[in-house]
Amino acid sequence: MHAIAIHGGAGTLSSAQLTPESDRAYRAALEAAVRAGFEVLDKGGSSRDAVTVAVQVLEDDPLFNAGRGSVLSANGLHELDASIMDGRDLAAGAVTGVRNVRNPVLLARLVMERSAHVMLAGEGAEEFALRQGLEPVANSHFTTERRQRELELLLEGKKAAGREALMGTVGAVALDSHGNVAAATSTGGMTGKKWGRIGDSPIIGAGTYAANDCCAVSATGHGEFFIRAIVAHEIAALMRYKELDVVQAADEVVMQQLVRMGGSGGVIAVGRDGRIAMPFNSEGMLRAAMDSRGLFVTGLLRD
Ligand code: ASP
Image: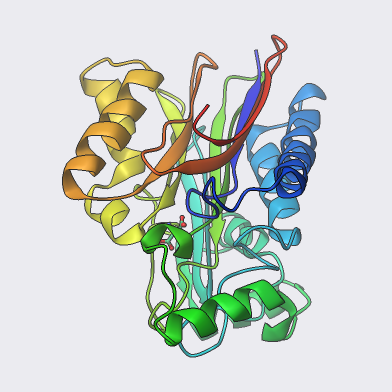
């Protein structure tokens, strides 16, 4: 049994904004990413590789708030966060506040595999990237017209749609045929964030978590709430100690705990049995999933 789920953020769009063209474009982009990850699993590859590949495809697509197409901080720069965790041995890597790394998920993976640390920030992370041979890109590489307009509107106080319109993130979770789970998450954060702000996405246990005895989780939403609710680890803990299944555990955290706190967003999660959960309490969450039993779904808003 192998399975993969991906998300492209919980706050990128509302039903009012979704045209037939953008619906098609989002679904095609999600399908490309989920298929890229699934192909790795289908060939007997690892969940670690599958989530890396899927997130990299989403980072390279300017539709999503990660890598190219990331949102802008209040200072007009992109500061990117990413993390990855392997459920087989609880290995983890994360980077935060990077400005010149094309694919932050690859850097997070290098931190996991080639450093003695779990998390590197800012300049130190950039220097590590150079030493590992990652080609730097200009910060403007990540900029799109849409993100610039969003920041301008926000700074002019014209951003009407509340917090949800300011978010977005990408992530992937997978179970491979060897029984190992993994999760990865990558983001530009939230539009207009204070520079130096760190969200949940690079924080192991908050935005990302994977452990073979229960599940792999990647979150998207208003990071400040997700950090305080330790969302990804909380789902794992409910499975471990309360023996909930992955759907019940993810629902409890996203639809109960986060709602009580006022934290908008969602998660994707895969259990060690290959079951997939994709709950969200926001208007939508871009998402897709595939498994070796023939499941294939994409979703944007509430179905
Ligand atoms: N969780 C991300 C953050 O707070 C944003 C998002 O997922 O939309 O940085």
